[in-house]
Length: 237
Image 1 (tube, rainbow, N blue to C red):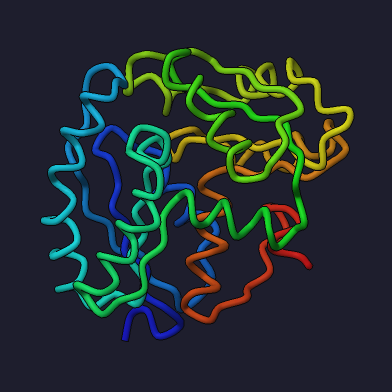
Image 2: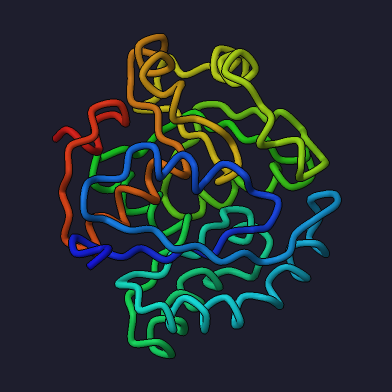
């Protein structure tokens, strides 16, 4: 049977051409991945995020019908757009409705930061400046300290998956992370897997990304502790 070591279901914004290929590229033997998409297009605005959210219940039903072991709500920006506590409430609601474990981009990052004991980090995103501005206060309100933050200020959703390694490195080198425990890169449509080792070596500290922490959390949820050395200390300790 496919997925004898775990069946992961992904709810993916439709503009995202990165998450599935990145996860497939390192997926442990015996783990299967099933994705359904929710429509997101145009510029990244609060209105676009709320419109996208209207498609989530359908996506949940489709993944539940597939028989997955965990459902991943794989969108980070909803965390900052919706009201406080929405993310945790939404994942609980999905879990109760389906009888299936549910995590999100935020809960995965939250648990990864706790697992590594990271309290102070430098933050990079591709978000439009107006959206990015929501992120640092979100983290500080939850007890984290932001050493520095910066954004690529990308407005068109379709542009984020085209960010190359050089542009990503420029974002990280522009951050002041001298007194930070780690560097955190947000967005599930931001390509990071091919760069994580090089960025960590350059920064001299852990570099966490949304897709990396999603995979780690999803695998832990299905009881798989595979070591994936290219994805940093989360997968090696």
